[in-house]
Image (tube, rainbow, N blue to C red; front, side, top):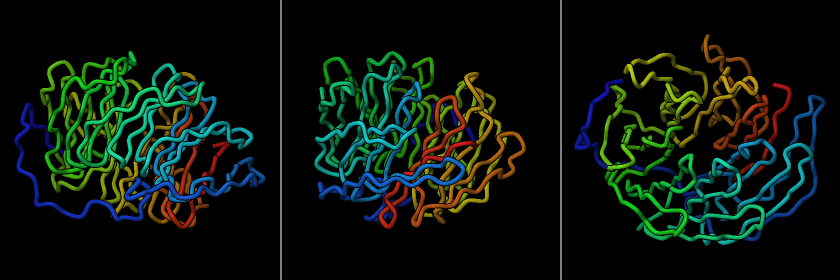
Length: 348
């Protein structure tokens, strides 16, 4: 990977097909009738499967910051909150008119942000179960979103490559930045100090932005320039975990411009499948890397040896959405259209 400092004018490749219309990232969702079921399935290891509540594929899964519940979003436009211990559905959030592509918790866990194909970004008061802000500004789908640590700002990324910074107190926009011109912004994340923002895109670039000015500080480019499905900071803020749409995941020391490790073995040639860190306890130290796969499996690697520790099989379609518990070795995974189930993997 090459790092180019302050170079936003990198030539891009010609437009290409991004994602199929039936994927789990909300392409053309719509408010279909939801399929309610209270049937639960648990295996002898204590892993729990929720029968589909979503009528289309699962697009995003996120554990609450203190680990008390799980949020799911789907291409059907619905958002659910779950008790991941007993499988109970605790709340339903209604308001989006098309598929929800991503959900993100605020740092204090009081609020939830959602980005949707209906071109809006919403803020939800989770305790009350109501939408308190609807922010409009994207000309096409809002594909990704992120909170800063203080909770007074949200960044949202559009399918047109635009990133909008929002004031969460008023719902008004602060700044619009053309981060990845004409290419979808597949993920966004603020650094833990909130001074910089990390963006990823199907143009093959990861970029680091100065939040105060909107200036591009660094552009990270893999030599073969594959599409980037997601990128995120490590818990200590020193590394970036990059998921490429070529069946590879890279861990980078972005300050030293050095690739630390590569993780392979899963299948990812078509969808934006995020990778994440699984921590070993309340110390917050990551011990594993986790990713879904287009073969329907969930892969877990040792972060140091890069060896595949576990291959978890359940889903009957692409496993596109995953989430790791903030301090327990618990993983949630969700399948696309032919599956639509949410699986809680315990005792890892």
